[in-house]
Image (cartoon, rainbow, N blue to C red):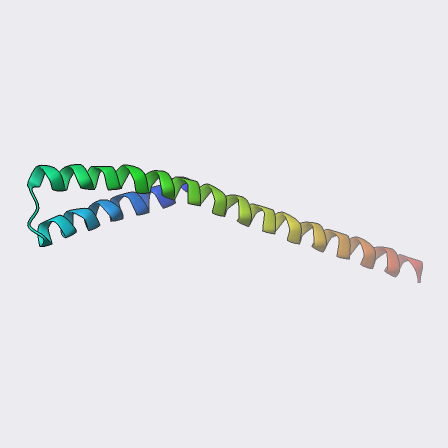
Length: 82
């Protein structure tokens, strides 16, 4: 998931920087440098956010599975006693 977020945020930031530079009439070299920096920075940020999101989702799923298994175990124990 980290690679997906990095692959989305990085190019999106790059395009945003290019459009911003073109709208404001910046120098081509300056626009390209700024857009490259935005690409690198936002790709790193996207990768970090993706890893955090993936771990949070994985932890949530594991917790739900544990609860489900414990509920089924308790239900089978109660059902077996009667």
